Amino acid sequence: MAYETITTEQRGSVTLITINRPDALNALNTTVERELGEALAAFDADDSQGCAVLTGSGDKAFAAGADIKEMVDKPSAEFFQEDFFSGWNEMTAKTRKPWIAAVNGFALGGGCEVAMMADFIIASENAKFGQPEIKLGVAPGMGGSQRLTRAVGKSKAMDLCLTGRMMDAEEAERAGLVARVVPHDQLMDEAMKAAEVIASMAPMAVKVNKELVDAAYETTLSQGMVHERRLFQILTATEDKKEGMKAFVEKRPPEWKGR
Ligand code: CAA
Image 1 (spheres, rainbow, N blue to C red):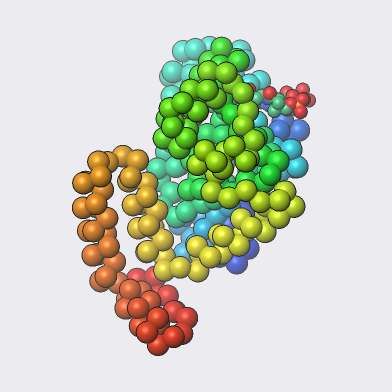
Image 2: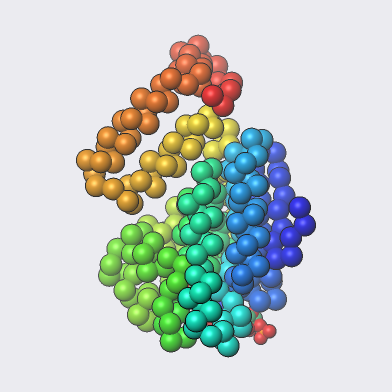
């Protein structure tokens, strides 16, 4: 499928999606929002694909935020009537397979928020994260105040949202926002390798693991523990559970069936 603002490529069982507006530091306009939603839906529906990687084109930015030029003259009533930014929530909630954000530079405002929508973040040592919306007289609108606070805690989230400062990859890893920091020239290799590992796992187990970690954000510990046990018990009915455990005992690699 031909897109205007993103590119997609299947590499074996991994879908690589690249936000492709390098002249605007990959700023996220409504076309990016729509096309990324379509690309994630296509990835999710394709049984040959097990994991996706999202990155930004060029060497400088993952995404430098929502497109300020698209918003500068937009009347407030339109933001409200269109439920502006709601498509981001929908695509995140609908995608059941995992996707990794490979953050190659600035991840600011909406860029930081999209990285946090991913299941985890692998960052180049050049990456910079921040929620600078306050400097524009606004606040995060794609989940930054909520996901950042859950990821790094109140104090650092307040610091970032109220001062609009950037944090580098090392600070982001220390704070728990980022899963791994890697040398800049190894970012895509590391992200693709991680995605290939995930794509090589039993597909139903992958979806269940993602659902359970996500549920930890939304539920109490006791509800989450019940949810976890039930899904664990359901997975024991799959052919892949039998195959996975048998393969371990027989000291051979498993052959997943996806059921
Ligand atoms: N929207 C639209 N265009 C953007 C953009 C954005 N968020 N960020 C950068 N650009 C454009 C610039 O306007 C510039 O285009 P022109 O050459 O046509 O002028 C081009 O990208 C290169 O940017 P700079 O010349 O500014 O590059 P720099 O290296 O000097 O600075 C930067 C880099 C620090 C990231 C700077 O571009 C910047 O501060 N960008 C804005 C960051 C920001 O405020 N993001 C939050 C947006 S609001 C938001 O995201 C709301 C939300 O919660 C969803």
